[in-house]
Image (spheres, one colour):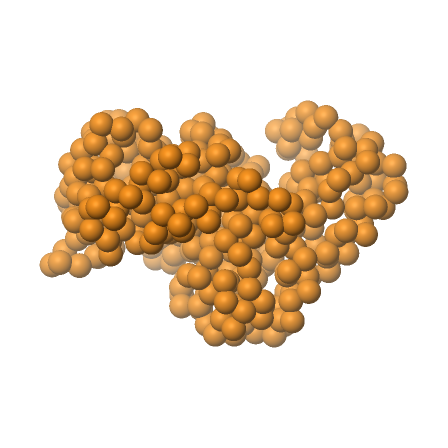
Length: 382
């Protein structure tokens, strides 16, 4: 298992995470088998947004005595009222639910305290301009949460969060299908049977979000990496082709700032299918060729998706990383010092390009890589 730094939290999280929502439909013994298998494979981050008391109790019992091996991403604002889940910003109800989470998980703190499910402008205003945010800050000051995060499906709200400086990380829904869509506060829009025929390429707001997160050192963990399983079925996929779990995971992990993919699991075999990413070949990870040749809604030609399909480079340039730093640099009137420092730290930078264009023959999206290398070298030398 490989581990990545989760932005400014400095936590080292497993690339493959554990989205625990599906544990609600399993008994303790089944939950135990799932968590044990995940731990054995090196998974160390678990998202528990669910307010259901039974699943919280099961997780707490299973992790008892080994909490130090796990990083918990818990949610503030997910409550259990009248036997059902209710999202709220009512501080007293949030306090009751959060204390219940700590008690049932048998811990006195969690690592990542998530401001839960902020998808609309009104959600943001209620969260940050009222007592809710003060409560979240109090939890951090008291040590009950170590870091402040937020969960959202809307890139516009995620961008607001990054710019606000309030959050250290974000749980965001990422997959190649969702990335086509413009910002929306209606989650149902992501699961329509067919997307508009004129969609193509990553929506500019989503691309902007990923770059802002990278630039501001706000880490991303990923929910809905498989689009609810639709991407595994050519008939239900908006592309008209099927992807594998490994291809979906690789897509997510090639987005800037992404540290962990929080997949959901029903069986130990599901966990093994996700963890197989760590030993997968380049061909098995290759989502780019599939998307480039899909019959519907393909990605835009000339757009780098950082897929790494261009490898190997005879000059040993990490082309995807160079392109990523170029895109980050041109976002601002002046190159951010951190971006320049990271670029200059590369073992082989763009000026090492020999212009052979071998990479271009392998790029599924027709990116003019040699030309971008020349532009990048000039940009960072200026």
